[in-house]
Length: 285
Image 1 (tube, rainbow, N blue to C red):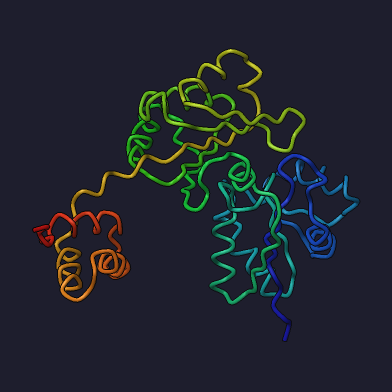
Image 2 (image 1 turned 180 degrees about the vertical axis):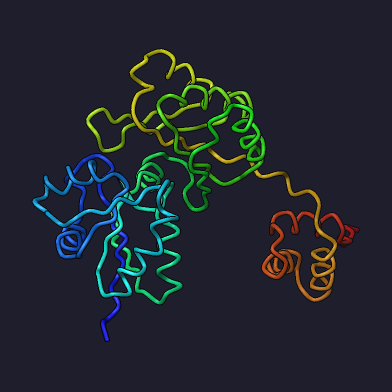
């Protein structure tokens, strides 16, 4: 019986070709075929690395039709690598259907990590990275784009978008209109490439910065926006009040608030304040 092949999901450079990992080169050189979003683009990268592995085209327009045949190859024992034009596959790139179908068929799917514009931008933006939300590309049409942004106004996590050169100015203008000119943001342009730029500041200033020089609207963009300030936690849920009230019967205010926060998920400072306001303090006679 023929052993099942392996599908390798291989990250490639987002600009600077020196960023490819040694492991990625080894995998690309030893698999039977490489599934490439654009065979011409990936072919140039492979040629530069001295790799002659055959390429198969896999892009958003043929992925659904090609998936069954690709899984058949893997079940037949072929080892395949999946690459996108740049960066980590499946991050706003095709490949999801193939990976899902391979996993459902019991085929090993192995990540070969490396460059990602998303992570590269986050690492240098100076915005909170402990919690963030990746929105990929915003809708191309202005009404749909604004509607999507309107739904994100209250999001407290750092927001990350990909954007193209011909929509970047409109995107920033819409962000200014909907999020306000004072919200802090970062534009990361042409990461790891010759004309890399990383510009941060209030959205209103970034819009003006883009408009001041047409060259700044060229290339590939990651846009990062600071999350909204969390709402003041003045209202304590009834269940949190109940838990805190029970704990206050046996514990000092500070300790009760900390324990109630751990049990209910409510903010400790808000619980502490609520406890002070609702606990009878001893009189100073």
